Image (cartoon, rainbow, N blue to C red):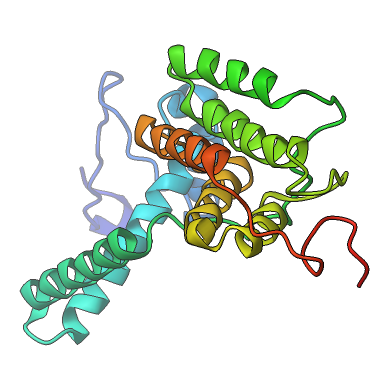
Amino acid sequence: MTGPGGTSTAVRLIRADVDIPVNTPRVPAREAAQDELSDPMYHEHDPNLLERGLDHFWDWIGDLFAGAAGAAPGGPLGLVVLVLAVVGLVAALWWRLGTPRRAAPVPEALFGSTTRSAADHRTAAAAHAEANRWTEAVQERMRALVRSLEDRAVLDPRPGRTADEAAAEAGRLMSAHADRLRAAARAFDDVTYGGRTADAAAYRTLCALDLDIEAAKPLLTTDTAPGAAG
């Protein structure tokens, strides 16, 4: 088609069924995209807060391991060897020193508020042993041993006496059994205050000591006899 003055003018005919390109400015386009993506339907499968936190944590662990591997001699293999060496050292210390325990509380009185005879304590110990309750059996047999010493006037009956005190006092009068008495008191304290568990061997050892103490004759002098003047 020729326009006025002989100039040719190109005329573009656009059919109605052909899409017309739309040039939208950048900022409005970005805002429109953000509005569209804010629709909850696009976020139904997003990780929750805990999952995102775990992802960040494992990313941090991975970065830490990568950094350590780069600094360790021999790279990743050297780091693995170093970690295994540390684990082995910790296991060896655990086996050698045992499970860490809190500081043991101060031992309390050997006997409670209820007064029982030596025979009563032995009967209770035997009942516990029959039921394989070795910790309670050891406790009751130690109480029987000390109560027997009090009944024989080897020790003066004194409320609040601990197992260690009883063993020390009786050991001075029965020197042949002093070491075994201290060991028995230590076993009593371990199962009563130290969180340990007694076994059948510990109970049998204490029973044998109780019988030997029952048959032994204490060395009583004016300086060591109960109630003697200091």
